[in-house]
Image (cartoon, rainbow, N blue to C red; front, side, top):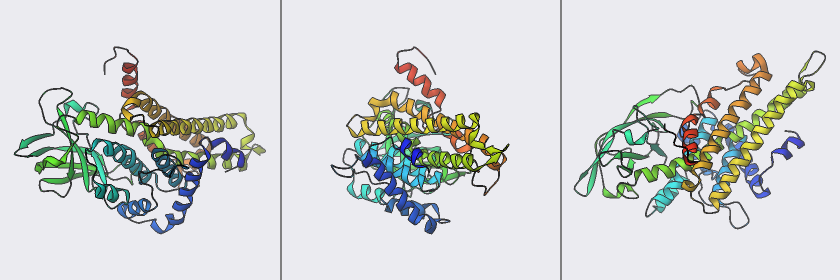
Length: 386
């Protein structure tokens, strides 16, 4: 990457950029030794670098949220598989941070086990009949003495085939009231719990996705996250966190995509000149740089606000707008890079091979962008309906 390009992209404070560089170097050092390893082995190795650590870097370093985002960017920049980066980002920001607040008494042993990569969580909200309308879910938990009996199924769950614990949302009261859902922390080796279908994906295929089945699974009262009826609030928190920062996994691949496209345009010769001499090529590459610059600014700005103590639920509109903006910028960057690479974008081992499906899939994470736009409009006071 050229010095000018590096300088343009260093829009975060120097301590943050040092974290990005440190994790890039750490990940580069272990990338070859983990290549070809199974998902859990790679997960534990990266967790061993501190990627899932929820603490900050002390008074002189960035706060815990910003540090986590920088760590994710660093390993992505090192070339760690995007599917693995996505799963780590979802774990850190979609579960670890919000659960630490939602659990009335955070379990220190569980916290350590998750941060060290020994325990893997998954977020079980979506069902085959729908996910964007949580109050339509069919999974239910019924009281049984001091505990609960859980019945139902969750589908399209990232990490379900390999996870140890699931954050499961179930109906505990009838009707579409704000207090009809409850969240539970469920061990996936418990009686009555099984793993259903594993889904083969065309995007981020290395991040396992599957189905979880609950057939009268008995849960203790301590399995409730928060309190009975607070499931919608827990879901709002986890979703806001995820919308705010899950696209952090894309920063490393976006930077690498821009870097390789710039090099190609500088070196490629056609029509008797360097390809980068074309105004049209230059405009495409400038737009790629703009998209990446904008995405980094937005994500790190949200991380800083979260580090400052603002809750994710207070940032619901900002989180949705950031998720929309970064995901759509990722798609546009990939379109530009693909156009400039030509046929090489569709051939393996050219150094310019494109992956258009993974950026497109980002448009659906944590809620499709069209629904997020509707939600933002509603927060602005418009009487819009889904």
